[in-house]
Image (cartoon, rainbow, N blue to C red; front, side, top):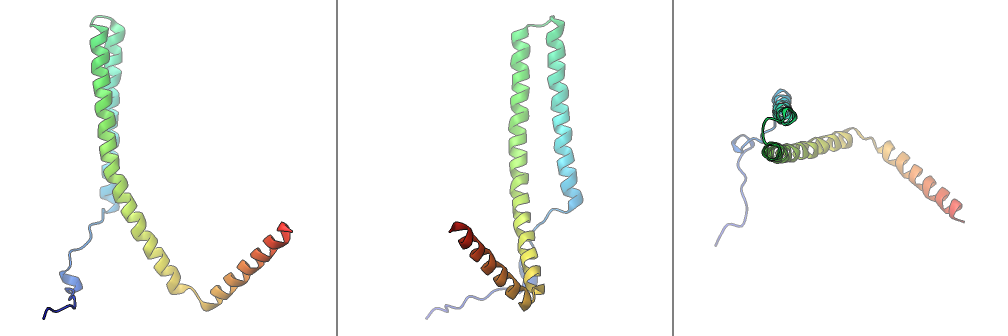
Length: 129
C-alpha cells in the first residue's frame, strides 16, 4: 500500500527564493536608463544627418525607424521582466505587512472596527430614507 502522507524536507534543504537586493535592482534600472540614453543619441544623430541633406532621406528615416523599433522592443522585454519581479516582491511584502498587522492587532481593535462599521451602515440607511 502506498504512503499517502507527503513529507517535506527541512527548511534548510529547500531552495531559497531569490530576491534582488536594492543596490542590484538600482543598477539594473540605471543600466536601462543608460541604454535608452544611448538610443536617444543614435536617434538624434540620424536626425542631424537628415538635416544635412547629404544622404538619402528615405534611407535615414528607415534606419531611424529601425533603431526606434529596437529601442521599443528592448524596453518592452526588459521592463516586462522587471515588472514581474516587482509584482512578486509587492506580493511578498504585502504578505509580510498583513502578518505584522495581525500579530500586533489587539482584540479591542476588532471591537472598535465593528462599532465603526455599524455606525457607518446605520448612517447610510438614514441617508437613503
